[in-house]
Length: 285
Length: 260
Image (cartoon, rainbow over all chains, first blue to last red; front, side, top):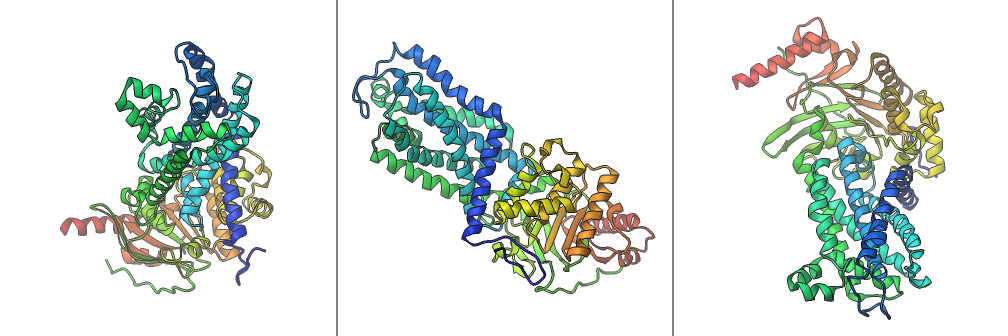
């Protein structure tokens, strides 16, 4: 029951049911927003499909992939590149969420979230999970289409990849959340593309196996090894074939915790970046 | 000019109490020893020109970031020490539009209800009730982007009421509205004060939104220059109109600062 005060007011609940209602509301809003923006769904789907249909087809003859775990036979380049493209879906979605949070902050929508009586870390985590839910829709839609393009992981892989997608989505989402507090204006998002998305994606094992990279450039191999996105790709790649890659799991969990801590700090009312910059002062009053 | 009369506070029953709050952004002072109170069932106008510090004060009250000095209490709850208890008693209409244009009116309100721990069926019921209160029950299913500026503002007022707050803050709520929409929004909020006993802090830079018997807090360059009923302000400034008194007080403040 909703509590009623002596004055007849009925404020909301802050118990477990209240937390659940709040979490559901935030996640549901993210999903609704995504479903309302059909062109966003289309763009999110077309991007990896272009890579799969055109880039991978073109490179099929150029890039040979030897038998490396988790693959037990030689695989087509399309098969190799699919986990990387799934991770790319997560990466772009996370950055899209970051962009929408900068937009929300500029328009004021973000403040309706932050003025909720629930702890800010809970609100941010819920927002993050909303972004992950949207990313899952995109990733599975892509995997479905890829299936008809002869990328056919075992049926169990579709289930096993779910926790890997959630975890990787959380890691990239937490990074994006932190970035949304650092980016001052929407215009700076082009910089995010150049300095975050592209380097993260290209300096990873998404497009080429690490041993190939090591052969051509030991330095690039080291960079790929330090890139958390590489571990997200490998976690997804192994999970898609029903296997667990423990090193990738540990690295992804570690980076998720670190990025989350940074994001919660950035949005902390007393220590965070908003307090130092005086974000709402732009209103003019 | 006579000195600003002192205010009496009641930390337990005031809908909003701000006492001795100062804030600066780096070297720039934004608020200097600001104190004000909004009693339950009271309508207080926070009057100040652009850049007076109204939005900074609102950011502190809504705990977007913490006040460094002084205290802010909502229905007796300290915003910094008891944020959950304080924020659940607070409804806010922000200066910038904050509805999600892609969603329907009802979806926007249900989202806000959820942010206050109110589940979907109850949230929907309250949303329809609140929309009825602001005369927009028939637009519940409409996308927000199809609403006029005035209608959006009324939806934001309805949204701020969903969790039955004891204190309502409105930051330049009528900016960009035509005269009729402004009057409508103001009338709705004044009605709430009478019907529900909500304490309202109405921030504006427009003197014509102030009624003859309102209490005003005049904020200028981060400082409270006057706090009390309008007749006292007119008396203090020795002016016949509020506009004149407002100009007089802000000019006096400028002159004092220039001498300092």
